[in-house]
Image (cartoon, rainbow, N blue to C red; front, side, top):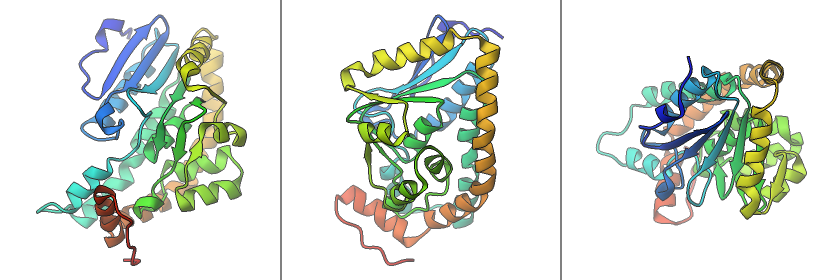
Amino acid sequence: MTVRANDWGGYTTMLVRQDGRLLTVSFNRPDRLNAIGAGFHGEFVEILGRAGADDSVGAVLLRGEGRAFCVGGDVKGFDERASGAKPARPAHTVLHTLNATELLDAILGVPQPIVAAVHGYAMGLGATIALFSDVVVAAEDARFADTHVSVALVAGDGGAVMWPLIMPFGAAKWYLLTGEPISGAEAARLGMVLKAVPAEQLLEEATALARRLADGAPLAVQGTKATLNRIVRDRMNLLMDTGLLLEGATFVSDDHREAAAAFVAKRKPTFRGS
């Protein structure tokens, strides 16, 4: 199936544009710093599936509109659900968390290489989306963080898989246990990203790299990606059942409700281990 450039409209949380063999996907919730919500997940998975099935696409460039790449889960949405008149059923919440591999499988399942251009914040699942991409270029002043622990959640999904693969294990433990942010420049030093550049050069640099991959020999490039991603899939198989079960348990904890409420109220949370 060949998808034409003018077939990429109609999405509410994404802007999609094809220029030659390069498909650019822009997260488009700038008023919420591209937080994941309001159909973001479903649209992103659909776009990745379409791109993967389209021989006219040689590479995918991911970026964010506005001031951030993607801040991950919508913490304001967490608070709204937790404080609502009819809170989510605990068992349903835990089981829903176990479905989190769908997005990661969708990223890994795209045969073509994916380049992420990261500016501003890449937090939580937003950082995971960036780091599961095949090539990451960051603005020097970008901020990466896996913020699960900061909102009283177990960092049991893609962060636990990818961070120890792309940086020293001891450093990965520290950043996952604390949620402390890493600048784009420091991420490049640690090997998390391919390179860090001044913010004003980011899009030009990332686009050039993506076009180079798009113009490569498709069978060779895609076969190499598939081979290397076996390492990532093996790590997912090792960790994610346990990690997501524990993450789901913390989603229904009092500490997580307190963290979400404190975030909205702009105060320091008080955790009680319950």
